[in-house]
Image (tube, rainbow, N blue to C red):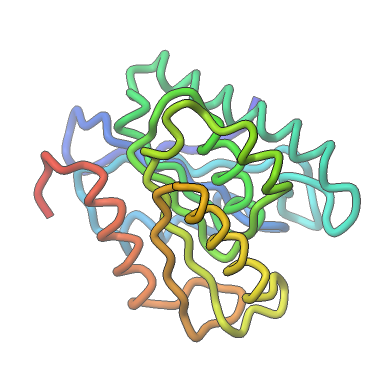
Length: 210
């Protein structure tokens, strides 16, 4: 079972939720700033720790070698988390799943396979694991699933060009992918990128205000 912390929305009784998955060596502590930055008072946040300890933080899978066992294990754990949230009255279509780097990979990996359509997927500075397998294993409603993918031209950890190629392949397969490039390294690009993420998340909940 994954550990996490729920940061409640300012708007009482809201069931709208963003689940955030961190990157390698980080933890939920690294995303406590996100609710204030996105400034969506009707949105709850669930910040989640990956399952494996890694130099004072956590990881979702071994990197850079032998990725598959950890990804497959974490895929089930994140899917189980979404199922548990459904049981706690957070409907899938009210959940945005997001992640950075390793968390981005897990967001895409799980979100496009998950049998219930989510409000949106937000993948920041990550990549797609075994893209051919993913395209063979898409959920029935995956082509209706909203996905935002962002990446930096100067990312020295996960190079830009191969990721852009993967996104183009997802788009060519008919997936609903919104792609944004930024002049950034392996990080979140300040106000400009936050603004793109905020608008994408907000658009997943069309009945609420700005």
